Image (cartoon, rainbow, N blue to C red; front, side, top):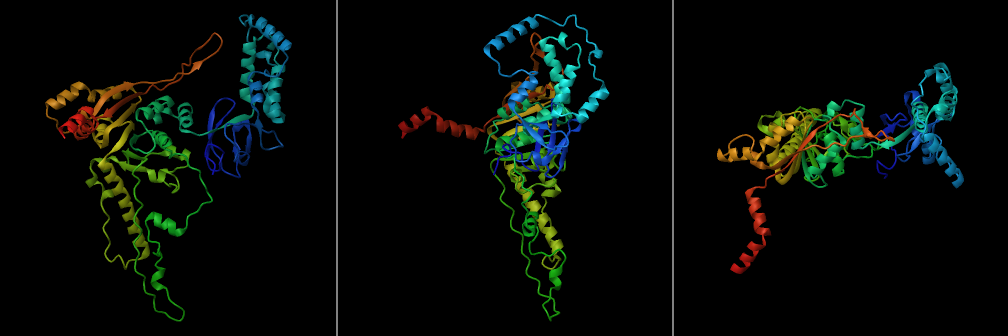
Length: 524
């Protein structure tokens, strides 16, 4: 089976980069038409099972479809017609001409809108009857410009590229990764919904947290699932090849929901009769549903959320819907969710209380009996997750949310194993600095002098460090290189390591110290 990033498969999300540079996310649904507004429309089947990272031209009417654009053609369009093969003499002559034109500048050039002789009505008419996927229109605009000869080579290329981005009906298909989705949310959508979390900051969090395949990771995510998606991508759990042709039988679906496969929700088993006999058939003994599948204990993500249901809406871009999860998706069995009440005070949560068995379970109707079994299986699943979380032993903690960090770390840090990494993100400096102060040396000395107590234990986290990373975009042009001033998002990250318990430290020191081993051998 092809990898999700090898070919464009049905019912997957893809990222289109339009000539203007604006990204757009679409779902490839077979036998439908995809519309890109002013750039035109094309059938979705024209993209199916094609490789990613290709550039397509939308064919003009009456044709319908796409044409693959070669790399050489893209280069010529970007450079304004350059890139053709030429002899050495022609290349030298062309270089001398460019050097002479480079001495010219546009200091005395007046930008006159009347220099463009084509009116807007003529441009719209040319768009309707034009050909070449918009290239003919760009050439008409260049030929009708009366002041084109006054432009320097740089300004001419810039003008040509601007018109190409505006009128060329072309796009590039890119795979939708976590990095691409992060940039899309920052540039197009509302960045405050993901706490202004930038791609480089997200990568720093994963590196500081030492996220790798095989571990158990505790995550507090209030970015809509972006942090969970990044961790799942590192663990190999994010990408899934959807197969709409695969269907499950009624028995398998009932078993997955916790119902008894032999139960009859309409009670037809009570009145089943044989031919010539009106005596109701004897009800078969009720079959208890199979025990729930064992909980995954490695390569898992445990999400703690403040609401009744977790907010993982961004996982829909990776073929996973929390309201209607796909059983074959890796996240279905490796993503565990709990709310804070189930972690802090599990005995007060109604979900963790075993549903009482109704009296006369063997005699009630099949539908009610199946409903009880579904509640029982749901309780068993949530109880197993809560017990595994309370047992601790997680390999790392990653936090990105609005909640007060002192309360989050008070309950989350004790669930980690020794030497586990703790990474906290905040969109501003103050929460991270306050969090680092909670585990400072002064706080530890005060805690030890007071004999400990309840609340946050500052001795559990070692070497808290506040970091900031930001890869700024630069506009690189001849003689005018400067950073882009419109980019936002300046989040801070705090990293630390949980202190190992004294028993673990003693055992490790005794087992690994050469001096102690030599003393033991001499003494023996």
